[in-house]
Image 1 (tube, each protein chain N blue to C red):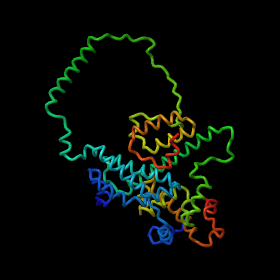
Image 2 (cartoon, rainbow over the protein chains, first blue to last red):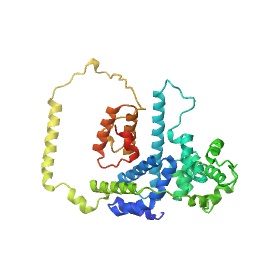
Image 3 (cartoon, rainbow over the protein chains, first blue to last red):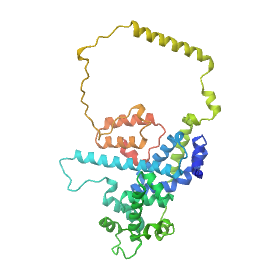
Image 4 (cartoon, rainbow over the protein chains, first blue to last red):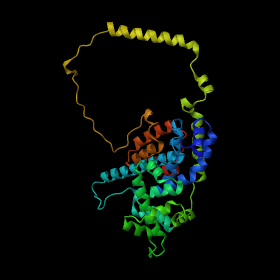
Length: 202
Length: 172
């Protein structure tokens, strides 16, 4: 039996009524969780709302918590579900809006606002070449990379959080790493437009 | 085929990519957001006791029904059972009619539209989903439904802090 990690012990204490344990957990995880959400949805307002939502779900379900695995996998599983809910909702609303506007058919396939290339580029241009390249990754690859960098989750844990097979998680991370390594090369994008260059190559 | 060293080198943790990522800016939640989350957890702690199976023994003992009510509860159950049996045995017998056959009822599904929330759905739906649906109603010009949903949301979650990004979208 694997020994409990420190966070799991804190969560068990919180489950059993120790409010101070929640504060300790919160301050340990708030930074990485916030960056995971921010870099996933690329909008500070939405990230803040999802951030609240993740902690709200953790609080609401604390009575059912059992320390079966590392606490981070539990927390980021909630975060993954919140993010996926958001992406699904955004796509659905966008489809509805497009259907309502049936008199003016769009010449291109519609994508949710947060995934539009101009929105991504605008977000990315506020950051370095590397963060711009992270922002331009396909969502699944971006998530795998962020989970590993921000939380130190292993490939097996990333697979568990994102509910895919280990090979799929490994492949996503491999593609992400390969693309991001290109963004570190100073001569890879002489026009200094890494986002568009990466978009064109995917 | 993938080059064998790409991922392996990265997973060792000391790759140039990881080093560069750690050197980048590391935004953290604004202090107002910290306060909101911590207040929310405190409010949840004040309003609801932990799950029953994890409630300390001394708390469970105080919330158990008092023993003097037990005979009364037993008598009420017996009376209800007797009344039910009498109603079944001596009550009016219904005659099965020809048109009692099951009917086909057509239901039009509006899966894509936000559904109104009922009281018992609040536990199953997170507040942010609810707020997003209110914003969608508002954008669609269905202001009366949006007002009604907002009123229900406020009565279901009186202490839930609405982040400014949503405030503009859900209000008239």
